[in-house]
Amino acid sequence: MLVTTLTALMAPCLAWSHDGYEHDVSHWIADPWMLVLLLASAGAYLLGWRSLRREGNASKVLGCSRIWMFSGGMFVLGIALVSPIDILAERSMSVHMTQHMLLMLVAPPLLVWGRPVVAWLWAFPLAGRRRIGQAWIASRFHRTYGFMMRPIVVWACASIMLWFWHIPFAYDLALEHESVHAVEHLCFFMTSLAFWNLTLAPCGRRQTGHGAALVMVATFFFHSGLLGALLTFARTPLYPPYAGGAFGLAALEDQQLAGLIMWVPAGTVYLVAMLSLFASWLSAVHAYDASAHSAGKPPT
Image 1 (cartoon, rainbow, N blue to C red):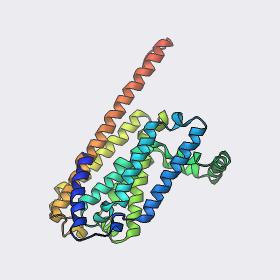
Image 2 (cartoon, rainbow, N blue to C red):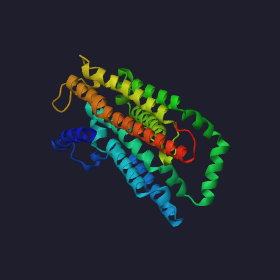
Image 3 (cartoon, one colour):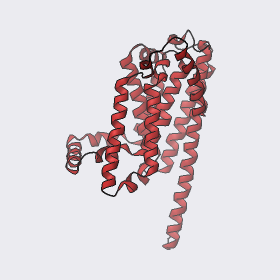
Image 4 (cartoon, helix red, strand yellow):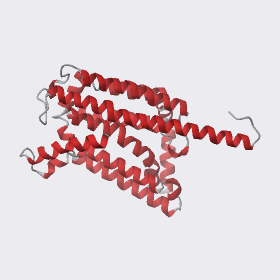
């Protein structure tokens, strides 16, 4: 459903770009420096994959599916950050909401499964990887990282960022100042990356128990859906910068569409994640019972 919504929103984007507002092809790249960063990240991933391939570990560490996942995540980031969506988000709240959903619900899970950090590390020679590891431990950032990646901390940070940046004052400030807008995007993306890193169990090793992961996704699904419902059923426009409306929609209609995007397509993503987690939990319990039975232990 999110893809359908994105397609529907891109139609007026294309029309807008051909109706005399923007004819310079450079306007199709909202932020050239961001494009450079994305290309550099993809290039480092490729170097890491080639290094793993030379060592004969590519298929074990970065299989074909993970490469496709990473590629998909980078493509979605490109759509969200350097396509006309980033420009049109200043005119339309529904486009802006679509951009946020891409940064929170589509790109992060794809990148988590793509394991970019592993690939980026292997882009360095062995001596370089050792120095990076030693520097990481010596800096003691790993302790801060360990604390910040606790489920309750990740859930709280992601929740606070979601609600804070939708307070009218903060939302309007992000639209008025490009630097604040960049911070907003970074907050959404980084907290979502941590959230899905905990709940999707990359590398086949669950960092969070199935029960805790289900609670994280279910509760986030509930309060993010509540925010979407509040935007959908609000009787007045909440964000002055969008007072003029966009694409033939009145400001209130545009806000209602934004709320629906956060409520329905985004809710579907969380629902699918919960069903997947529950199925994985049942599979893990079944595998444990089978192994316990073969070992003569009582089942769970």
